[in-house]
Image (cartoon, rainbow, N blue to C red; front, side, top):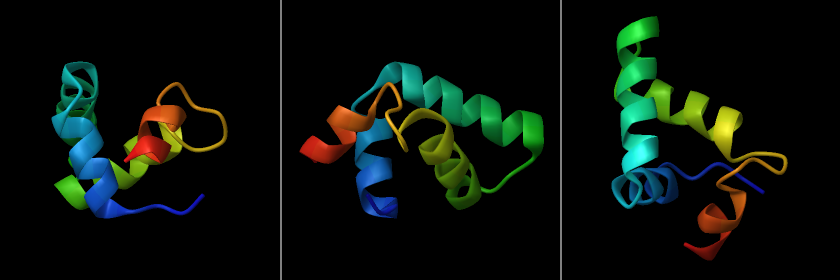
Length: 58
């Protein structure tokens, strides 16, 4: 499964929990949105993550 910025943006937009996690990652690590999205992908989606199925459905 490959990372797609547009899919991650859509997934975050549709999920309030992921929106909060994204904001937290951006603030805590002082990252730009694009880097924080990639970090969130690796933490919550990739390799049987909690949101992998939702990501694949997009």
